[in-house]
Image 1 (cartoon, one colour):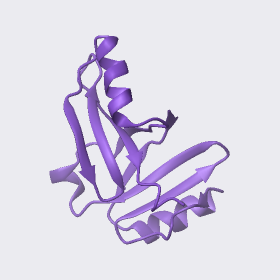
Image 2 (cartoon, one colour; image 1 turned 90 degrees about the vertical axis):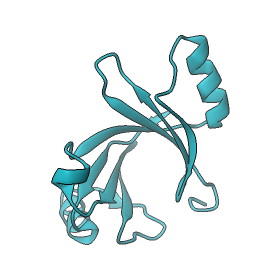
Image 3 (tube, helix red, strand yellow; image 1 turned 180 degrees about the vertical axis):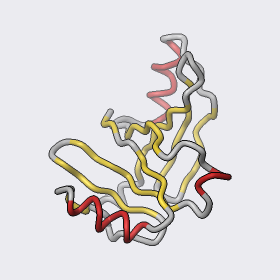
Length: 119
């Protein structure tokens, strides 16, 4: 898996400008009003639009991973290790995802990107 934290922002273009100034490279295909992805070396950072930060997403950053194997295989591997997803696999605009909780309740999303969008 590859780690990709996601920062929730009120303006994707403004956030892109800021993170580009820090040296991150925009790797979006193409960036949109809702989503952009940046890289710095081997690290990735997702920029996600959210209309009202305080009401819908009290945390401004979430822990996110991108799976390199199909989510069904990952889910089975996790279950064999005693980890049950908090939310099973669902379809998303970018591909699919599932959600786990760490022992203290932190939500962790694991994505499987649609290869057509990231070709």
